[in-house]
Structure formats: C-alpha cells, structure tokens
Image 1: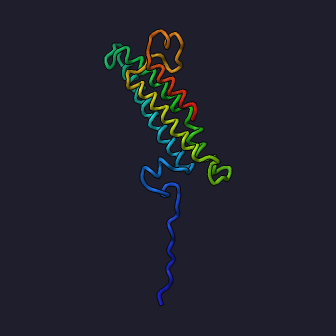
Image 2: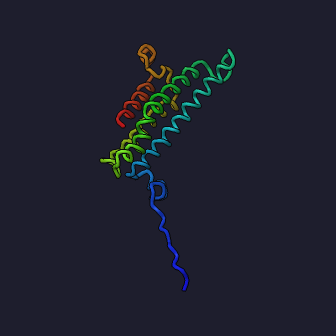
Image 3: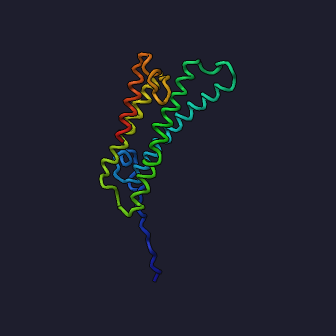
Length: 171
C-alpha cells in the first residue's frame, strides 16, 4: 500500500484572485486598489521626472540648446504640477492607506469597496485632464498657479489643469 500524499490547495491571494485586466479594473479588494494607486502614481512620477531631467539638461549650458525658453517654462510647470499634485500629496495616503490600514486595524475589507475603486477612477480622470492640457501645449504658470502669471494670458489650458486638480481632489 502506497503512503498517502497530501495535496495542498493553492491559496487565493489578492495577486491570483483573478487574472486579466478586467479582474484588476473591477476589483473591490483594497490591496489591489492600493497597487493600482501605486502604479498610477509611479507613472506620474516618471512623467514629472522626465520633465525635471529635461530642465536639468537644459541648464548644462548657458544658452538654450535643448529647448526654447517657452518650452523650458512649460517643462518647469509640468514638473511642479505633476510632482506636487499627482505624486507627493496622494502617494502615502492612497497607497499605504489602501494597502496597510485595513490590515492594521484587523478589517477584512474597507467599508465601501466600490467607492474606493471609484476614487481611483476619479484620481485617474483628474490626471487625464491635466495630461491633456500638457499634451495640448502645456502651461507656463508654475505649479502654484500664481495669479499674475495665470491670468495675464488667455490660456484655456490653465482651466483644464485646474479642473484636473479639482477633480483629483474628490478622490
């Protein structure tokens, strides 16, 4: 008689609960939503870092060799807006708050998991509005939107960026 073998079932975790984009984009698991925030914020970090790299490369020589003066101002604004509003402010509360806090307090899940997922979609929509203004020509008002700079020229792209930050604030 052969000895009995134990068959271990594969544990279902947040990483293998479902496969494919649909399982990630329609999830109600707080750990997956925390990872979605981490990925989205990392993309914004890469965009802001690329703008900062171009700004620093332009400062290598005294003449404007790489980009024009207007483009330099726009890159500076893009870097500030993306890094402050879409990386620095939301990074810790969204990623660590979604991933760790429910486990730390002993909760199985969040109280409103669909609202948590909707918050990620709203955050992403605000980023899309802001990136649309950047792709459409950019703004050169700085990340603070200082009034003399942001109102002296009739730029509708400033309105789109402010709308993106306003929408992102709802998440």
